[in-house]
Image (cartoon, rainbow, N blue to C red; front, side, top):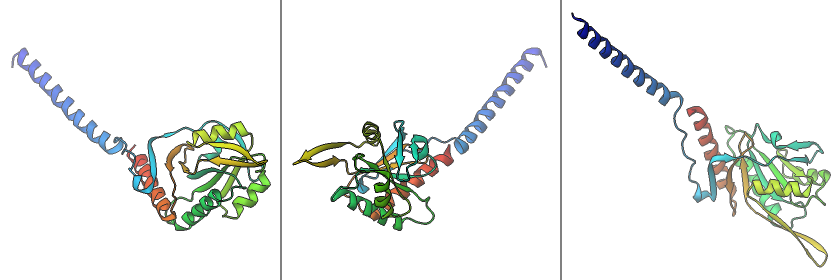
Length: 219
């Protein structure tokens, strides 16, 4: 066998090895590093899910027990967050009641979420008042109060707003009515618009959780 034939055979062998390696590498990639599934379309549940969850603003606030809470404190669990206030005459009690019913409907196989009332009226919503208010709805209900500007910034990063106005010397607070769903990374995963129905809320949470879990496994 002359030298040119040997070189040709050697090159062909290298090509075979290269192609084989690419095939094996592709299979490994498909099994262990698949592209993430796009966010589920949940318009029928009044829910918008972000393909890439959004980072919240950094903050330092106080919970219903008087303890300091930061953005990092929200990591490790799913959380339904709602901007409102304890003196709210109608929207907030109805929203909190819907969350309580939702909590009772959730499958035991799902992780236990927290329910967080972000105060839009910190002047009146002291930790003690928040504790009495949120405690009425259940053990998994909590509240945040503190500096007004910090609360406004947090509300904004939850895609919410609130505005103070006075009528005949009485304070009224106009605020967003949606729920913001935070994932265990403490990021905004979805926004759930009213009208809120507990069964729909429970279904939306389960579908978002399953989507997030599958994407973690795929990655």
